[in-house]
Image 1 (cartoon, one colour):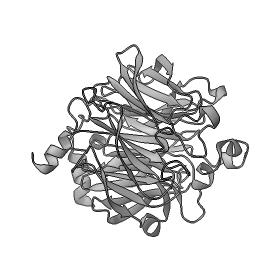
Image 2: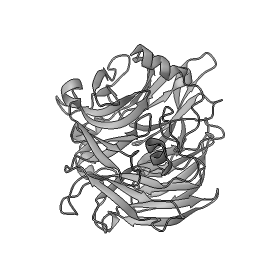
Image 3: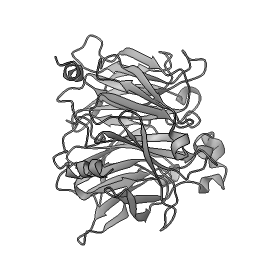
Length: 422
């Protein structure tokens, strides 16, 4: 453990990346225009093969296949496909679902246009007691996996599991339940220079697998959502401080500006932006700094994407299908400067490093997505000129019999040249 932690902390010049929400330890980065978007997709019974799958979209405007599906790889299972993450060498994508403990590993290096399923990791529950792998975060030679639930009562108490890149389990780290900790988990993100790992919190299987309308009416169940964020000592992998952050703080985004020492998140149930920042005395603190839309209408902020200079933040809100942009020139007082309805329901948002392209998908959770005409399932690509989002393409996942489009990662042809040596 010690050698790998020291390697983590020694990475100083890690500000460059091809997608602003990637781990800072990922190498073989995209330079310029991305060629592909990989979409981790929830299977729908009776639609196509009904299985979760990795779908590849051609997103290079110069390609004859621009905006088209060019490959799909099914897992043969339907387990609430959710998030995925690259290994540090960027050759493999790890992906999993929230109703199961299996993790699927796809080779995206050998042929980036046609990923191949090469391994299934099945021991997360047995080794750690955790259920529902959510975040996959690359560390040097390792993958840190944040789970949402546990195998005992399927509640929200959970933790992180550490694997090596071969898929071999190393150790587990339960989320703290003392010092103000509620034991819940959701996302994680690392600030190498500060030796800090930051985690957020959500809810367990018993809640996220229920229909949203039914869940909202259950007052007791609604109490079972996370209300904390935790600062960890990365070197020791131990919690150092717990913050009270009401309303299920979700995705965490560290500013990528080398001069900054703060991260931002959005709380889903309160529609608030929270800033985690080091004060003049070096102490970490969390405070509410902004409001997203009208909280009384429960817009439900979901995914966020920070710009590479730390000066702007994109926020998607699921219920009203709106994409908003916040000026973060002063992170202690975010200011909304733009908004656009980009779908009847929207969830994930991925941004190119140059900030000129955004990709948006629709699905949140199978039992939380809307019904009828509002149940759009898509990926949409947009151009951003600094003042307006312009749609460039759309893939209708229902029409294509693919399923529900969720998490995205960017791919490049250059990866194949690197892997094969020419």
